[in-house]
Image 1 (tube, rainbow over the protein chains, first blue to last red):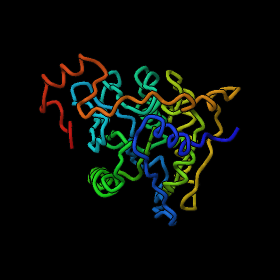
Image 2: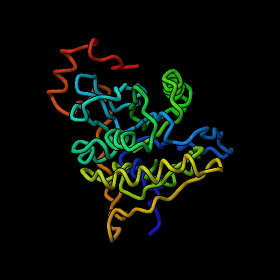
Image 3: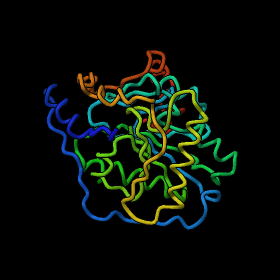
Image 4: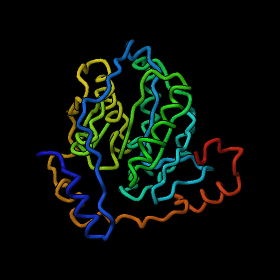
Length: 160
Length: 111
């Protein structure tokens, strides 16, 4: 069966609930390309996820165009991770955060030698932000700066 | 990674790996570390094998034998939580800890 077409379904759903129409980004230009310069087994990988993950003790995300970041130490105890979000069924993520924030999975891949290492800090945010300008002009550059400062070779993005 | 192929096609990132699972499971099923590992290995390998910007790799995993979940996705509305602009904690205990601990244990609570 074909993949679900979410854009029309979400558009209809928003209309039913009286939300403003969401303006989906369409990038027609060929995206930039940065080839990996060494094998994954020698790369340090970063992780950025939009599933609303935070660490117990941190201020949780809110649900109205929240463009903030949460810094997740790479050595965090997985049991301390929490999930909050307005747009997806949280039951799996609250039971096992690895379904939207694959931290144990990545640690295992480092132990096995598949990856060279991990960033010292991972990041989480919300998504579902109405203003694409806030994402491309504010959230994304802050995220990029932090990964560059940490010296990662590649970043895995995990939206929900 | 993505579980929404049409949205990713529109955003057009340099590389993507598509997992045809219900939203909220972009990197696997809960408490199935073997599956979580296999699909991440498949996805991450694209860093070494993809050569063309804008490529999407379709990962060879299925959520279930039948695909009834696809008909249900958003069919009855998604019951979205109202767009509150105050912190939405998973539990009251989290709220208490965040308000009590404040900034010292929380390097990037908001940034």
